[in-house]
Image 1 (cartoon, helix red, strand yellow):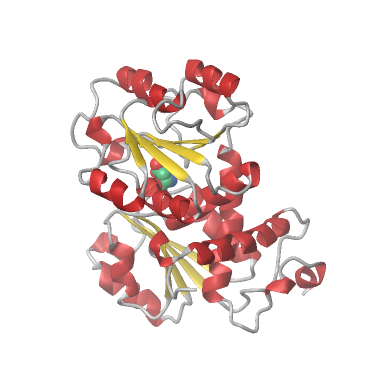
Image 2: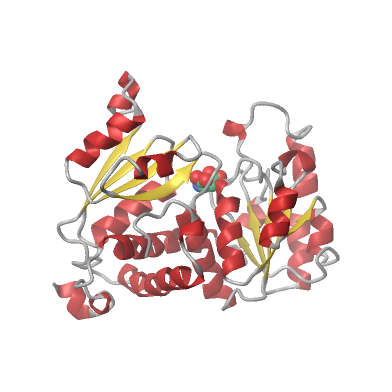
Length: 331
Ligand code: ASP
């Protein structure tokens, strides 16, 4: 295991597999009446969030608490950063207290990498600007695998605001490493520059035509999983599409598209990292459909983050075997 988790590229296929397998054991803890295992007793984890979050921050906090770590939340607004303290001074101050891990979200791409070079603690990237969000990609893979089985040879379409999405960047790495075929779909204005070279290197397909991909005329095979991305209005400085209505008509998972799709492939699954813009990139019918895995993704988020914390923080003498047994929970 790497010392930090900053990018999905830090994990090879075997590393991803290890995290996902342990997450299955951690998921069992979630189903218990007493959700407590001793695995990270005596460890301290700081959640340092300079950007807003509901799912990621609370699931990291729950994950740490269920593993008996001491977890503390610091937000940009409530910290000395609001008094002008530099990021380096803030993280070195936290590090000097002797914490074991810093889970960090920041608006600047590359911030987690920088922080890792300044501190002794393990650093986990919980989203850095438009760059990466590795634990999101891990929980997406975990959720899809639970419904679809192995992702090897499965076709995943990722649709929407690619330019501003750290979720797509991490998912492209993990899905390709797990053997999935990926097509990314977006209007030309929301395709990041240089994506053609990137697609060639990583071996994924590009399209501007959602209906063509969904009719399997694009890459030539039906879509098994559809990942809808949020339109990230807070990161948009100009007009990336004429009107919200036109975006939805071209790229939204509307009720009509959902019906056509599920008629053709009843096993299709729908993911969204959240928060959803209902009525823009995803209709309420699709968000709440039987095929939607949105809440399964949230649930998996805790198990996957427990697994990541376990692999980064637990020592060799902390037996993973204790995790899934009642013996472990009684300790
Ligand atoms: N929650 C995810 C993130 O922080 C996706 C999103 O915000 O659209 O990147």
